[in-house]
Image 1 (tube, rainbow, N blue to C red):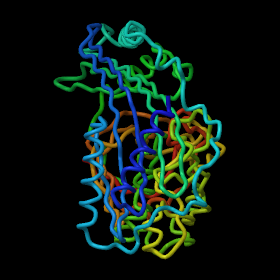
Image 2: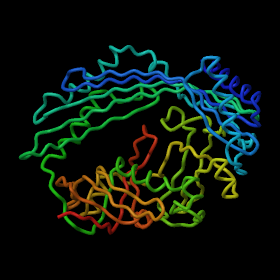
Image 3: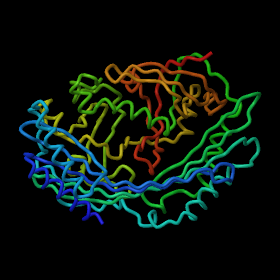
Image 4: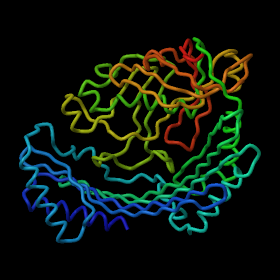
Length: 437
């Protein structure tokens, strides 16, 4: 039960104070992970792991350090805490290191439905049955060289205690499935693709048949893929690939990147640097959602936070430390569910109006500079011809600058995947440079 973790965290705080610590934040966690991999209707791998650990943040005479251990036996814990406090005393003073303001602590737990007993109570046979059912939708079909299916489940508990008044805990679960298929293409080509999802609740998962059929559909769309052209045209980005773009866009809004001068967003709060069509919030308070949580890594109560409004950055992801260094108020350094405000039109309508362009379905490597926003990504997708998604293409790159790209955001679709932490719809960008043949 979570109280056991709270008891352990409270003990660690007390031991650290006895050893001379001025302030302590202790977090204990317990987790269990189970996964099964099936390939071509044969069980290939089963993995199960459990872990219980303690993370200790210690403040001594203006000095700060973080320590972790998995050995929680009484003698080992005493020695660990004493050594951690002694090591902290040997560090340099950091005037910005203080415990979080108690006024930000979460003292009431919202009803977030993060834990599903059905996930924990599954038998190994039940998990294997799901994996086999998923794999059966793929293996042995026309042109299939190899098909794999993965089932993965996890459960965890977290309890945290601080010496200045915080104590809380919660339980959570996760469950998911993924199918992948490799096909026999033209000549020596072996196109492959897959699909899957994960959720907090077992009942939320789509069926193995549904996931398998979607994985197969995506793989078959890769048959006949050729190298795409060098062109400057409209880019329509699928919701899956668009989620990756949003991660690249928001990543540099972290407190450490901003404070250390490694962010294209540094000094830009309130300024509209991208299209006014782009509105994004981080919301960790959606019941049952993958990105929900009751409190962050400092014990601060979770809250919905606007990130971009009409293309203007509203907040950085700031913990107490980087907020002090930037002389501003803290927010949180933990993402919640990232939600891009959807538009009104579906993919087919958007593509019909675009007429000619490139439809990107996934990214293949590449990099982005967090300081400047300059990027270069490999991609897979399809040509858009006569208002329809057409021939598959690959071996293409798109280059540019993230802020310039999102300034050229032309439209936001209406199709975010509601069972993802990244709820991002189809995105449409004008005048994008592609490199190919």
